[in-house]
Image 1 (cartoon, helix red, strand yellow):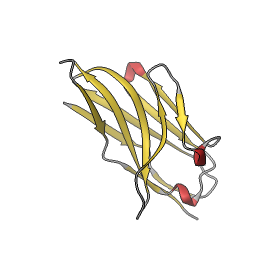
Image 2: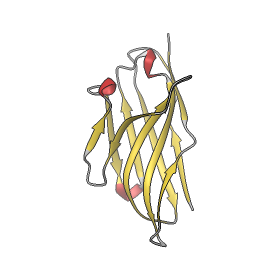
Image 3: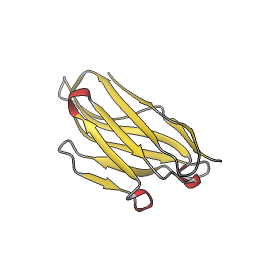
Image 4: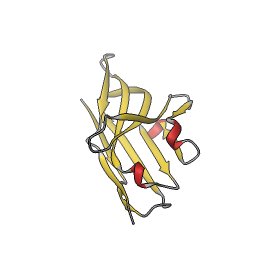
Length: 120
């Protein structure tokens, strides 16, 4: 019913930048909170940043001042601008969305993930 697709990952040197995008599509009436999570090898998945439909944001302390989350409600899309990347940012980044379907049911949906590797 809903597809969530991330893009924009890749290999970048320390200090570099990447911009992740995530688009949701399908039987969507409205998307509420959207967020980015990451999971490094051997570690639990953690919240990186999230954003409400109205634009309120929340960041994990380790990325504050370096990452910026934004969204385009008309396009059902959320972005993560990542600057000053560090090797410890290496992880698979997942997009998450709280969705109300056209049927009025609600659900939480995940993308398949995109790899971000920070290495020289």
